[in-house]
Image 1 (cartoon, rainbow, N blue to C red):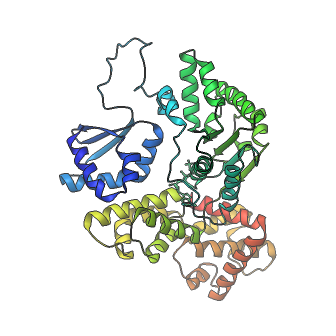
Image 2: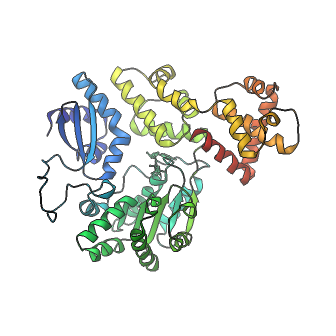
Image 3: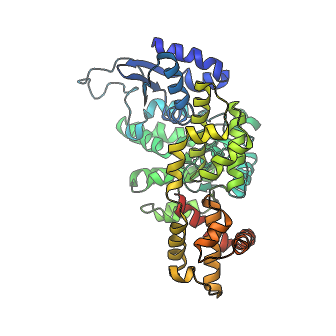
Length: 450
Ligand SMILES: Nc1ncnc2c1ncn2[C@@H]1O[C@H](COP(=O)(O)OP(=O)(O)OP(=O)(O)O)[C@@H](O)[C@H]1O
């Protein structure tokens, strides 16, 4: 093992819980490189988790140990010397990354219990944006194959779809430890299939996927345009469905909107329940941050959580990334995480998130969305067709920028701050009762912050 990595692990031993260390970091193999460290993960899932959760911490420990900012490269595979390039095509291919970056045959063998133990319902923070998704996932987990089949969770990136999917799988296995849950990303399904076709082992492939109690496939939008895969998945789906084995899928949008997905597959997906996971609102973002900080043992005050939640609206993954960076830097500099420290440490990151959201930008996007001219939006005319978009734009300005009520009023044709306050309250109330209004609000937030 690389000596540097061994020392890094020793240091991390004091920072992370034993379970985290054993689950995610000990399985990595390392090789020293001139400019840093190359880490090899046993499968793509571990790779993503290490990259998303631990990379800033690893980098900061390496900085502490060597005094240099080292590059850490992550790859699926092994640190063993690579086979000679002229190796015969039929030689075993365990360390060779295949389509989608996975080593399919090897990875598939590990899938069955590849659920992330941290992704549970207990660690999932509920808010309006994900309430329904969480409830559906819990129902499926307590009544697999019978409540909703398939359960399809869809929505933008980093909003907790994978988390919920694992949480359902973990709960199924908690209730029945013999339950066989197979989780994989759609690229891994594709990779496994290509490998099975190459190795002429399709029967084994079919058997593997059909012998599970629950099949969880992430990001099925990647099936688009891959006709053979869709065909095979379609048969797998039917076989599982008929014998009441649970299927849970995620997609980055409503599947009917995914181009190049076969109509008969789209229709099958609609047999169960499809639930949208929306971006969390401000309160939920702050609650998620506090909960993540608590889980990681990082001391973060409410005001810091509110600062990050206010400024980072894109998705939870970005929020978590900011928290990890903050924690790693606070640890490195031995400083408490105050709002000043957070502002200073995350200056560039916060600036990137702030960039797009200005009042003129909001006015422009809202105008285009409702087909209202800018001069009408800023005018004093009170007809409903102008008043609602105007109120929406004011409320968005309050939600998405740092401007005060009087400043917002000023930017909307010199209105009083009480008018802005009234607009914010009206929109908030309406979006609680009026589904259409809520959709408009969420869509606009996505457009402005995406
Ligand atoms: N409501 C929540 N409570 C706690 N953690 C959350 C919540 N929503 C998202 N997260 C966290 O955000 C991170 C990203 O979530 P996840 O990977 O599930 O997103 P996703 O919707 O599957 O994204 P993608 O489509 O890119 O795969 C995870 O670490 C997850 O734990």
